[in-house]
Image (spheres, one colour):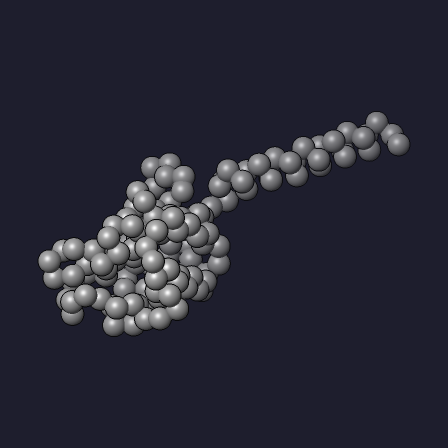
Length: 137
Protein backbone atom coordinates (compact mmCIF):
# COMPACT_ATOMS: atom_id res chain seq x y z
CA UNK A 1 0.00 0.00 0.00
CA UNK A 2 1.50 3.34 -1.01
CA UNK A 3 1.98 6.27 1.33
CA UNK A 4 -0.59 8.27 -0.61
CA UNK A 5 -3.19 5.53 -0.15
CA UNK A 6 -2.41 5.34 3.57
CA UNK A 7 -2.79 9.11 3.93
CA UNK A 8 -6.09 9.10 2.04
CA UNK A 9 -7.43 6.30 4.24
CA UNK A 10 -6.32 8.17 7.37
CA UNK A 11 -8.00 11.38 6.17
CA UNK A 12 -11.20 9.48 5.35
CA UNK A 13 -11.19 7.81 8.78
CA UNK A 14 -10.67 11.13 10.58
CA UNK A 15 -13.50 12.69 8.53
CA UNK A 16 -15.91 9.87 9.40
CA UNK A 17 -15.02 10.06 13.09
CA UNK A 18 -15.37 13.86 13.03
CA UNK A 19 -18.80 13.64 11.41
CA UNK A 20 -19.88 11.08 14.00
CA UNK A 21 -18.75 13.32 16.85
CA UNK A 22 -20.48 16.32 15.26
CA UNK A 23 -23.71 14.33 14.95
CA UNK A 24 -23.60 13.24 18.61
CA UNK A 25 -22.93 16.84 19.71
CA UNK A 26 -25.94 18.10 17.78
CA UNK A 27 -24.18 20.09 15.08
CA UNK A 28 -26.67 18.83 12.49
CA UNK A 29 -29.72 19.65 14.58
CA UNK A 30 -31.97 22.47 13.54
CA UNK A 31 -33.65 21.36 10.32
CA UNK A 32 -37.27 22.63 10.64
CA UNK A 33 -39.91 19.92 11.06
CA UNK A 34 -43.68 19.90 11.43
CA UNK A 35 -44.77 17.39 14.07
CA UNK A 36 -48.07 16.17 15.50
CA UNK A 37 -49.14 13.83 18.25
CA UNK A 38 -51.74 12.74 20.74
CA UNK A 39 -51.40 12.68 24.50
CA UNK A 40 -53.23 9.82 26.22
CA UNK A 41 -53.18 8.42 29.73
CA UNK A 42 -53.10 4.69 30.33
CA UNK A 43 -54.06 4.23 26.67
CA UNK A 44 -57.23 6.31 27.07
CA UNK A 45 -58.16 9.89 26.14
CA UNK A 46 -57.16 12.54 28.67
CA UNK A 47 -59.69 13.34 31.38
CA UNK A 48 -59.68 16.89 32.69
CA UNK A 49 -61.06 17.72 36.14
CA UNK A 50 -62.94 20.73 34.76
CA UNK A 51 -64.22 21.79 31.34
CA UNK A 52 -61.96 24.85 31.07
CA UNK A 53 -58.30 25.60 31.51
CA UNK A 54 -55.13 25.53 29.44
CA UNK A 55 -53.72 22.32 28.00
CA UNK A 56 -50.01 22.92 27.39
CA UNK A 57 -47.42 20.81 25.57
CA UNK A 58 -43.95 22.37 25.48
CA UNK A 59 -40.69 21.20 23.93
CA UNK A 60 -37.45 22.20 25.72
CA UNK A 61 -34.25 21.71 23.68
CA UNK A 62 -31.66 19.36 25.21
CA UNK A 63 -29.04 20.57 25.72
CA UNK A 64 -30.46 24.05 26.00
CA UNK A 65 -27.51 26.00 24.51
CA UNK A 66 -29.49 29.25 24.47
CA UNK A 67 -32.35 27.82 22.42
CA UNK A 68 -35.89 28.78 23.38
CA UNK A 69 -38.63 26.28 24.27
CA UNK A 70 -41.37 25.63 21.72
CA UNK A 71 -45.06 25.75 22.68
CA UNK A 72 -47.29 23.37 20.74
CA UNK A 73 -50.78 24.22 19.48
CA UNK A 74 -53.11 21.91 21.39
CA UNK A 75 -56.70 20.69 21.17
CA UNK A 76 -58.03 19.93 24.62
CA UNK A 77 -61.03 17.99 23.29
CA UNK A 78 -58.91 15.47 21.39
CA UNK A 79 -55.65 15.61 23.38
CA UNK A 80 -53.74 16.37 20.21
CA UNK A 81 -50.90 18.79 19.55
CA UNK A 82 -48.99 20.13 16.59
CA UNK A 83 -45.86 22.19 16.08
CA UNK A 84 -44.82 23.77 12.82
CA UNK A 85 -41.16 24.42 12.09
CA UNK A 86 -39.63 22.97 15.26
CA UNK A 87 -35.89 22.50 14.78
CA UNK A 88 -34.84 18.86 14.66
CA UNK A 89 -33.07 17.64 17.78
CA UNK A 90 -33.62 16.19 21.23
CA UNK A 91 -36.27 17.69 23.53
CA UNK A 92 -37.63 17.33 27.04
CA UNK A 93 -41.42 17.44 26.73
CA UNK A 94 -43.45 19.19 29.42
CA UNK A 95 -47.22 18.70 29.72
CA UNK A 96 -49.73 20.59 31.86
CA UNK A 97 -53.47 19.97 32.12
CA UNK A 98 -54.67 23.01 34.06
CA UNK A 99 -58.19 23.35 35.42
CA UNK A 100 -60.18 26.53 36.03
CA UNK A 101 -58.36 27.11 39.32
CA UNK A 102 -54.93 26.89 37.64
CA UNK A 103 -54.23 23.53 39.30
CA UNK A 104 -52.42 20.96 37.17
CA UNK A 105 -54.31 17.65 36.87
CA UNK A 106 -50.89 16.03 36.40
CA UNK A 107 -49.66 17.48 39.73
CA UNK A 108 -46.71 19.18 37.98
CA UNK A 109 -45.08 15.76 37.45
CA UNK A 110 -44.48 16.69 33.80
CA UNK A 111 -43.39 20.30 34.30
CA UNK A 112 -40.24 21.51 32.51
CA UNK A 113 -37.88 20.67 35.37
CA UNK A 114 -39.34 17.26 36.34
CA UNK A 115 -40.67 15.71 33.15
CA UNK A 116 -39.14 12.31 32.39
CA UNK A 117 -40.27 12.59 28.76
CA UNK A 118 -37.49 12.94 26.18
CA UNK A 119 -38.05 12.68 22.44
CA UNK A 120 -35.97 13.24 19.34
CA UNK A 121 -37.54 15.24 16.54
CA UNK A 122 -35.90 14.02 13.37
CA UNK A 123 -38.38 13.99 10.51
CA UNK A 124 -40.80 16.43 8.95
CA UNK A 125 -44.29 15.00 9.44
CA UNK A 126 -43.19 12.97 12.47
CA UNK A 127 -45.91 11.73 14.84
CA UNK A 128 -45.04 11.70 18.56
CA UNK A 129 -47.83 9.94 20.44
CA UNK A 130 -47.28 10.13 24.21
CA UNK A 131 -49.06 7.77 26.62
CA UNK A 132 -48.80 8.90 30.23
CA UNK A 133 -49.12 6.24 32.94
CA UNK A 134 -52.28 5.99 35.03
CA UNK A 135 -50.18 6.36 38.20
CA UNK A 136 -48.15 9.55 38.15
CA UNK A 137 -44.39 9.17 38.68
